Amino acid sequence: MKPQLLKITHEPICSFSVRQDLVPNINSRWHYHPEIELIHFHKGSGTQFIGDTIKKFNPGDIVLLGSNLPHYWMFDEEFLVDDHSGVSFSTVVHFQENFLGEAFLHIPECKPIRQLLDFAKRGVLIPKEHSLYLGALIDQIHEVQGIARVTKLIECMAAIADNDNLELLSSLGFRYHEHDQESQRLNLIYNYTLKNFRKKIELKQIALIAGLIPSSFCRYFRAKSGKTYNQFLIEIRVGYACKLLLDNNQSIKQICFESGFNNFSCFHKCFKAITAYTPQLYKEHYTRKVNPKIAV
Image (cartoon, rainbow, N blue to C red):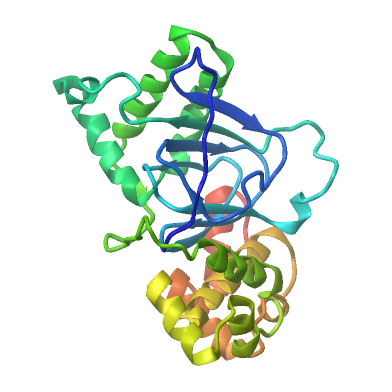
């Protein structure tokens, strides 16, 4: 699947860029760039699309993305408001693999970092138990200047590489074609689906958005994404249901319909197929994981 190329800029006196985003959805489109991306979410939650995976993201999450890996961060609606209270939503670092020179990664001491960057081609999620320490390091990259900024980035990458529990996000077989000219059409499909997944989406509706007849749309979407449109839609609905299960006190049946499902047994079956939990067990498991003292 080929997204839009995003041009990353940095100051001429700096070898890489680091910024804090004070608004969500600053790059709210399916995109890629040759720079490696390291992102630490401070505020907000939503849905992340990385390669061929769809997953919820939350405050504290840290993700490392390899060069040219397509991605899209879609914040939940409640964070798309005018008053952001001056709190940053994320700190983002972009750097070229060879920003320290062609030879640096090939010295023996850099072998773990070289392997990490190979993993990052599929996207890497840092385990929660290490996010506090690594998040502080990423904040320091933003705060310091000069050579200290470079050393902090190296220290951060070495700390991530030293972790044995990294979660790889995109599938091993994921591929996309750099010369594919369909990014605008895919953006239309993604944006329409994200805005309307809680309602019934007819095949003819989404095919019309893509400018195709239904039968052609089905073949097109599967060829571009590696999954059917229905699978894609179900994954978005289940991801939203996961958020509702942890964020409010609605009943599971209410959450089923709020997430766009119109049949409870179908919701239950799809939820378990994607998360490996029933909705109730998912809520119990992750509530205890966040706060072991809570009894549910």
